[in-house]
Image (cartoon, rainbow, N blue to C red; front, side, top):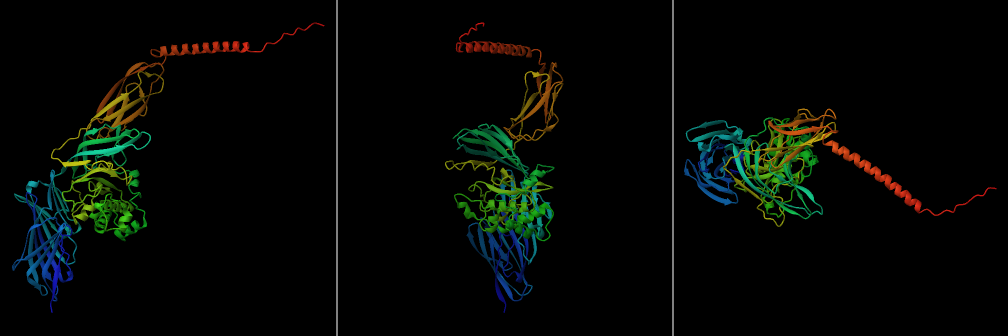
Length: 637
């Protein structure tokens, strides 16, 4: 007797792409899929599914699909017998569809070709200056015989600047761009396609400082930095800091001096430009940082036995040598192992677990746990890695959640690749979107506020400097259509004695200040003089200087003899710019030094006279106080 099979297939458009068939060994499936995006971003998904019976004992007359989109509409299905009956149930961010066939798929080798279509706004989105299109990966299935997907987007979106993975083919007609993919390309990752090469943000950030100590302190706030994938400009920073410096991780730190009990509100207004491709052409990581970024630390317990054991399990008996291949395996484990827990966002304060605790509690993770576990495992594998905290644009927090600092900010990791340099990845969003590719190429929505590599806790990002009495609107980010050109501008002051004394050691100070709105890159700095000898004046690096930042360089100067007397020029060359200061060299024994010598001699003579005179009066007074002695006359015998 043939048995009826209720074929329950989880077809997760966001969470899992291809059906997972219960009684999978009894049926094989093939798919021809079209994602057709219109000018408004609404995507029509058409699935042509061939269901083939592999046994003579079972038959199927029903299908069940769970579609992990926040909204689907215009759902239709049909088979050769006509329109299919569909029942639909919406729950949270997923929709469950029950489809009843008009005929049974009964008998060995029997097939049923049927079609389902629906529409959604979750796959394509206009974000600032770019269009983003995302398609989840194919879930592996032993009986998935074929899977072919075509993505069609309007030519008005512009040429694609990012397509991952590489499509099997790409064609165009007068209205559409067609990208085709097969099963092999989609089983490892979903499709990420960006149309547009840059993204622009305007930001308005507030930092609240307070000195609770009994003495004045020098403290700092972390400003959004330039990275391999972003440029920033600062239009206004109030109040003006003492200085802005760059730490070893590349953070821009604005320093402020606070008196005892003083409170200070810092305001930063600027813009950021994010790039699809890295700006760094020849990436290099020195040995000091390479060692630092593979060390164990709080929350990144890379030497913990559990972390080491899990890494061995992930990489297997023949671990790959290539860093990217290792990072990919670790990334895939983290994405598949951890489960995002949105309930933790309801807590007043989200406690950070760290890598080991996350490994032991995989069902209660937010972005911090995804990031910490990836970093710990990567460092254990010898891959330099670090944490990025900042703003990540999302129009749908259910699919792309933010979970750092009470749902204001986001955290994601990056790892070092010898060929590409620093590579940003986002295991949290690949998990919550069910396989959208956030490993091969990150989108243009991740705006970095701080880089944590030397420390897992410092510096803290904007949005985390508020006290209990502060409002939560300290991070204001908006998409922008206005491109900008950063204009770094340096002001150079050369300080020297007036005059320089011939024959005696002296010094010069060169102070370089960035008065522009953008980062001033590391460029050669050289100092020369026509006649005066400037010691250690060989070419050196100025070093990067952020806006409002400054740097000082001190040089020792000498002359040939005590009798030199001349006017000279000191020249400072910085990045092709020349700065000149006129200096005077005068002998010690002439001109301005003569009055000094006469004054010194007169002073010494006066001092000697006073000492002698004082001694005379002291002796006289001393004798006056001696006791009287009677004079004794001796008579001659």
